[in-house]
Image 1 (spheres, helix red, strand yellow):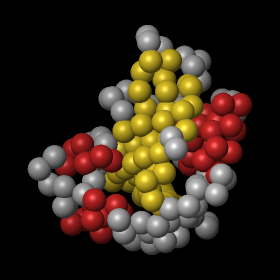
Image 2 (cartoon, one colour):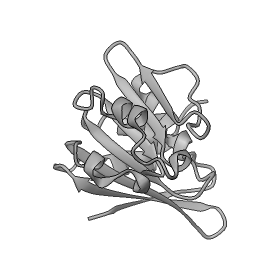
Image 3 (spheres, rainbow, N blue to C red):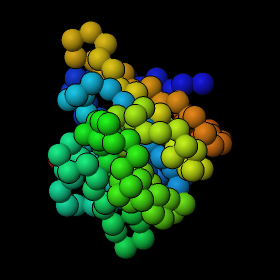
Length: 166
């Protein structure tokens, strides 16, 4: 069942990405969907901050894939929108699948990622971001593959309460 998480105007999507690192199983693929500018990259930035990453996190819009690594973690952040017509880009797919069982992968415009590639992951979470009204964002998390064991609801609760210190 989808988890709906309201994201008020003064609440960055990074606020929800930050606590997700405590719940999202390694080996997970997160398909990020929503209109341009809604906060997909900001969400990944929050997730990386939750892992302790203090460096820059760029949008993968122009460089279609970014890989971030820490002492005991790896995060892939890609953008399928720039690959229109090249959904099977070998370098993109190869990097995405590298260490997929022990890392986390986030793909913006994830609905464009071919299903056979998605099926190679043990956990697939679809995270849809939509505007409701003029300034309220709704994040809808749907587990497409894998076992929830209650972690999505726990993450959603923490997300509603969490505030980052900037």
